[in-house]
Length: 200
Ligand SMILES: C[S@@+](CC[C@H](N)C(=O)[O-])C[C@H]1O[C@@H](n2cnc3c(N)ncnc32)[C@H](O)[C@@H]1O
Image (tube, rainbow, N blue to C red):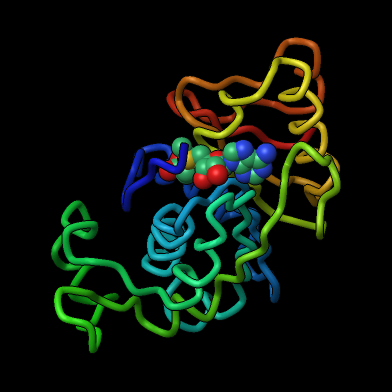
């Protein structure tokens, strides 16, 4: 269930950032929740793409809460350490890899740089409990997770995302997922070729 990789569906992230950056421009705190983050490649990809576009100083205003049910109880340490085997980093564009990763003490492993690492906080959390651990997010990312839920569960989880989004907040999901018709009034789809929704 925890299949993931760095720079997965970077097209959707690119599209989301096109709308996200003008919204949060000038904010002193930019809050993001990556729900169902697995071992970290997704929130780290998002953070790197954001850092590339925002620049070093503005990026310091970013806080990313990355959460997962984490049945193996291992994701927290992996994400907090930010150390991954080279074989898992091959999809990262070379210039980005050179800029954001350095060799770790462990042979064949690389560590993500501190300016990215320090923006991400891991929280073990079961989405189906429908109890958010925080709120006032400018973006919620939930990709390749909702498909594992029953239709009714999916609706309740998306309603929860809506409730924790700040005004103008965005919800990003995968290409094959939609906000169900029953709750379509909660969001407006804003990107033509990615599932980027804005809180209505
Ligand atoms: C296929 S991975 C997707 C990882 C990442 N979002 C991506 O798209 O690459 C699905 C993740 O959903 C998590 N998950 C499944 N049920 C969950 C739940 N009830 N609450 C939180 N996370 C859950 C799994 O542990 C797994 O890490």
